[in-house]
Structure formats: structure tokens, C-alpha cells
Length: 339
Image 1 (cartoon, rainbow, N blue to C red):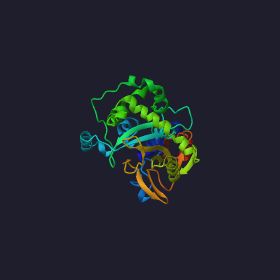
Image 2 (image 1 turned 90 degrees about the vertical axis):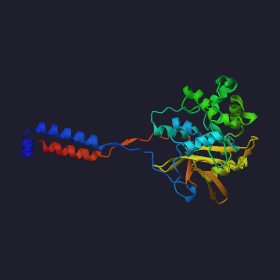
Image 3 (image 1 turned 180 degrees about the vertical axis):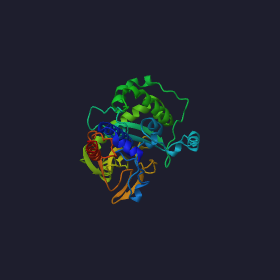
Image 4 (image 1 turned 180 degrees about the horizontal axis):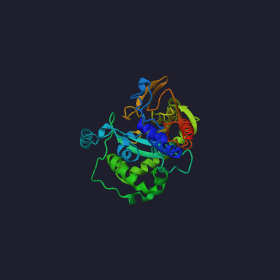
């Protein structure tokens, strides 16, 4: 009671300053950041017809993703590393092209300050990697830890690599990316004489990029950037052009319910002949049946996939839990109360 009368006996201006100070403290404590991009766990498999898991990382390139994306597969456990070291054999080569707009969008949503360099040309898919892979497993990788990387060996093709196999993080880390790809994946591809040094390995990626220009393959079936398509339509376009089953990957914005076309992977045998990607473990991608065949994908089979032409507007990362209209009402009350 004493405190109540003491408060009421203060000058009106003093009471207002006191209450305003308390209000500022209340607002500071009541506000918290809200992430517009959902971090909720999506479904574990598409064959259960649930939402796809959020593919934040590229499954076959996990160490790169630990630095540039987020995530790792279970093969990085102690048992998985030991198994890789003991068995460096592999069955197929996965050649991955990425759609840079989707990659940059994802990076920017996770970190608005993250720089990302898009190719100057539109409808331009870039190389993500060539990954020797054992059927129904991930890897092997880092097959020769003593193998060195000499960037000078890439001088004859360095200009083309910067164009078609760039580090979207920027030129400053370009050499680091090529070194990583060679040490992790190239040292396993050395099993083949056609790929047993840096120049051969990266030159083969450039050859495949020229032979399988993904924008043209999709364009032939009227699938263009800034369009929405079903994953079955995308799959059919690739099968129509190549005669082989690919693996199609999306990034999923769970907050807004939008799947963005991210990567398209095609597979080759040890004779460097194009084959189906059937039987290749693709992280959260699964083989889904649909009328007309099967699709290996992590995209939702029943929802459209957006093929963006430009980076979508940056989503606001913070919001107020304390509605501003309530703040206004409270200030009005305090002004009346201190009169």
C-alpha cells in the first residue's frame, strides 16, 4: 500500500518516465526473432506421401556442405570412416549439375550477409561435382590421403572451369573448391586411367557439361526458368532426352510450402557410359512410383516444383511477438494516466 501511494504522489512527468522505462524493458523482453524459413523436420520418405525432408546439404559432398551448407550423412561416423578407408572401390560416377539461383537463395535465407556469385548468363547450370559411388551406399571418399593437388595442372582449362565449375561463394575460394573436389572425389575416380590426374578429372566434368546441357534438355520439353512443374514432368523431360533415369533434387521452403529445383544428377559406369541412377543411394531421395514409371527424387511427387529465374525477395527474418497496436494502446493509456 505504501508503494502505491508513493507512486501516486510522484509528479506526473516522473510517473510517465517510470512507466515508459518499464514499458521499454517489457518490449525488449517480449520480442524475439522468428525464422521465416521453416526448420521443422520434414518427412522421412516420399513413398509415405508426406512432405519431403528439407535437403539442406548435398549428400555426396558432405564435408563441403559442413563449411558451405549444413549437414552430414551417417557415413561420417567412426565406423563409416573406417569402412571407407578399407574399401575404396565404387560402381558408378554421379555427375551433378546445380541450378545456381536456388543454391544462392538457400544460402541467403540462412545468412542474409552471405555473398553468392551467379553466372552472368541466364538458364546456366553449373557443375557441382563428379562423385564415385558404391551402389546402395554413399562414397567412398578421400581414397588417397597422400595425393597432392597442383592447381597449375588445370591451367589449360582454368578459364572454362571458372565458367562451368565455379565456386558460387566467389573467386576467393575457387581454388579451395577444386582442391576439395579432387582430394575427396577425384582420388577415388583415379581408379580409372581416364580420370587418374587432376586435368583428366576436371576435363571430364567439362565434357559432360557440354554434352548434357540441362537448360536445353528442359527447354526441349517447354520447362523454362520462372515456371512451376511437377517433378514427373521434369523427370520425363530428362528421360526423353537421355533415355536414362536421373535423380532430381529440390530445396524445400517449409514456411511457404515451396519446392525449388536445386540439382539434377545423372550417372555413368566405369566405361564412362550413361546409365540409370537406379540403385544409387541419394541421402533423403527415394524411388517413388507414379503412373508411368518411377522417379528418384526428394521433391514431393504431388506438388509443383518451382524453377526460379531470379532470386526471390529476401524474407524478413525477425518479427515482433508484442503487437505494435497493443503498444500504441498502452502508450495512449499511460499518457491519459499521467495527466
